[in-house]
Length: 107
Length: 113
Image 1 (spheres, rainbow over the protein chains, first blue to last red):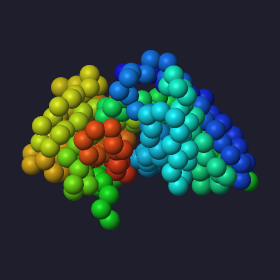
Image 2 (cartoon, each protein chain N blue to C red; image 1 turned 135 degrees about the horizontal axis):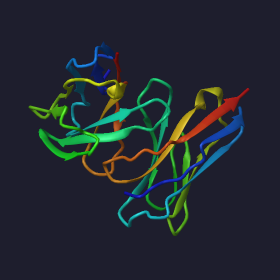
Image 3 (cartoon, chains in turn cyan, red; image 1 turned 120 degrees about the vertical axis):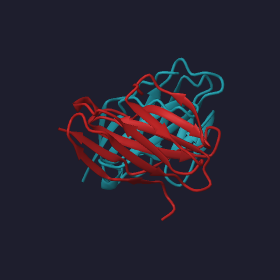
Image 4 (cartoon, rainbow over the protein chains, first blue to last red; image 1 turned 30 degrees about the vertical axis):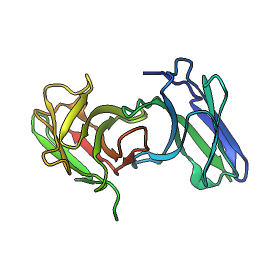
């Protein structure tokens, strides 16, 4: 299973755009890149998934370069409620979560 | 509410006791997963079912752990002879086949004293 590396923590302020980059150098050809969000004492929640180029939904955008060895989750105009842990995962159905990125949004 | 549900939400037990958790997935999902999460760490995969068949088991799933999904609907996770190291949040998720998103339940927090 491909290993991912992402920053342990990030700080931001309300209204700013936040970009969290994840590296996955050993990603396999068939692997998708998926991001989850987790609040304390809750299960993870799916944010976005992509295979290549750019994917956008109502919550976030996911940028994937051509070599797919990294990906960037972009959260536009974050609010205090976006304070959470964000996990980058690659692979299939057997999700392998790393330590995630703890995002703190400040007023 | 048609999301994934788990019961109980909290369980406190003494070391050596057996515990059983239940997960009810989203009804049209035929895949069901169990994960374990300890404080400050990401969830760790334990096992998954496609319908009633248990297709993958992690090395984390020792002989004291057993999971079932008898009719391809709800699932149970049993831990026998609990140890303090079993204290964790046990998460259940369900999905359609393929790389589709997994929908997680709220988890069962187990505390072994």
